Image (cartoon, rainbow, N blue to C red; front, side, top):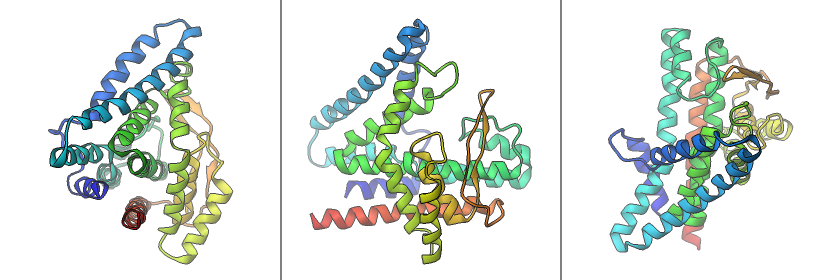
Length: 305
């Protein structure tokens, strides 16, 4: 039950600044690698980026497997729990989302500044409604990327699987953009992330639907997922956003500026309810309920097997 212990630790402590974090190390390695790749000729950027993404993922998996093989008994359990704990981001996501809500209560400008901590888009032109929508979208997507996906790969492949996934997801968050800078070099990271999230994103959408809060909300969420899951440039994010939009009865999506370039996005869901700061509360509650439902299912399967 190392996964459950790791989740409890994340719930209690989030990510303390003083604790060494594997993802920080991953980020430094990725930044150094892609700095070199971006200096290559255009014809080499794509293949080098693909090779880098694959090698990084395999190396992380083998590194963690090898590291854990050096320990046994309680020491191995403690290390495994620590690695799983660092792979989860539920409490941090909750804190960042509610940080946006608290900042919005002071001013729209403060809300924009707080939102910029958790999104890659340009927040300067966003009004209050757009800020809330962006926060809800981030919570929905990261329920999969930062919680369900690590838990899913940990359940299948142990801490090494969770860390390998975090490598994939960290590469995508750093270089997996469609802008001119990373269009070629980040192609491999973006596609590998799409592949890694195919199952977790759809699983997250189902968990959100079944955690909507009532039979009628569950039905609305399921119908919204069915209708709008493809209304996103990502093959995965639309599933989570549609589930959240349906459960909350709001409209998400729409085009935004990313690093000075406008990226068109269709809308997701129907505007049944007004979009106000309380939608952030609804999104984080949905995140927690979905996570707990996943862990209950995992625990049931664990004990049965």
